[in-house]
Length: 201
Image 1 (cartoon, rainbow, N blue to C red):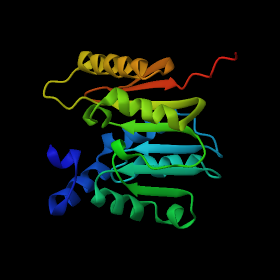
Image 2: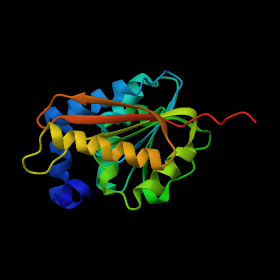
Image 3: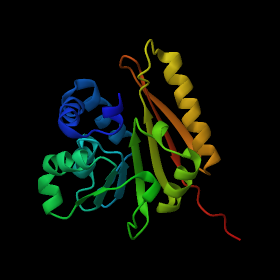
Image 4: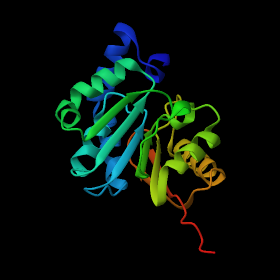
């Protein structure tokens, strides 16, 4: 399981191949991207992009925008760059080797942020979500996705994971929540929220 958290070495290359080719992984990533309602000119960030499946789906939607990605695995950065080589060369996809604790400067505010199956591994999760919220424009969207991997996971496990993510987002100052469920085994939860607009004085 440690390799799925931080792929590296020969085993990490195998893990990356599994993550890229497992049907349920591809379904989960493409589904999550579809929920974010990415527009052609959007600026989007994926945290923990792995082999770059969702990055490719985001780039297919943000055709005149920019897709950024950060991942703490140098191996995954290399795999994702190869998978998205044309968009990287065109300057539409930017993949950075760093962690969520060391967010780079993305210039202008972001329109949307995605994290698939990794928010549970972040240190100081509420603080990390606050950092991400500061990167979003007012009314910008975030989607946190969780497919529980513990033995015997059920729909109840997924529902509890969704509630935990919603609670973290609430503490971090997000609002306007929506929860979507993808019927896999076990089910996948996507918790969507917005960066609230500043109230006029």
